Image (cartoon, rainbow, N blue to C red; front, side, top):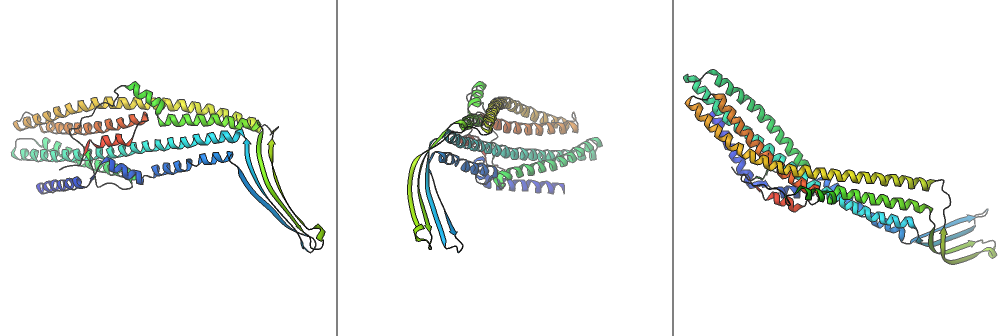
Length: 436
């Protein structure tokens, strides 16, 4: 019965692997799905479209405005008399400092919207990459757990046979049974973690691919170029999108000070208009008339006192500019820290990968030695089980170290403000469809 179950498990695994090889989606395909379906990215795209309107709104304060208005009234006891007036007026600002500063602010706001959208695009690359590799990592854990379970099952069967023929004690069987029961629990937990990782990926792309391309077994990772941390830190300090956004916010705050101070300045407008007045008195024909007039001139205004409102707004904008300076410094420090952490993550990750690769070879040799020793009677069953566990744990940690190193490479470029789709394509070249 156990053999039949084992054969069924292997057949199902082979069938799933063959199907995955045909329908596997790679990292670029998943990213393209995210571009079309991720609601966070869609929100950023709509925010960009809305932000682009700011320049038109700011420019409107410098362009002429045209208004038309009028009245119509009925007069007298019998309501037979009437008056009808209308006017058309054009106003062209000639000197309005506040309007000019508002226009300059609007252009900065458009630039800020573009920066925020670029930040959202970079964040999408990182979210897709992290979710993708989280699925691969949990798949690896489940694969290793199941492989370990199969190996334990073989060791359990061997222990039972040896006990039946009297060459081993019941302790070997009990230890193998305990490990097998633990492997069952680990398999359930790994399956749950895989489903959660797939759900997180589905949240971004709208649907979970049937299978994902996996990292090549012979993949060779290297340090990002240039391989100097100070270069990346300098780039992060200047080009990080969070830093650039705060620089724009500071410039907007400075313009706001000038705009509010303009509340003390005079304003000058060119005003042109046409007015028409008609009065109709049927009982008094002499009072009935129609008059039309044209006018053009310059209108000026000098503010004298507004209840200290202008001074208060200036003080408020100065404080907000100081806040923007502090936010800019905080953004720079955060970008520097993220760049350093990501670079060290790549550097240390590469060292970990090499160490785990060496540990994998050693663990495999240890397992083979313990199996041979168990067969000749110089090792006990628990030694073989421990060696098996060590090998599968090492392989799990090796795969996780590779994924983390790749993600830290993307995070490093994001911190430096240089992360592009081409960087994701380079990572995608390291992936291959899963094979049986």
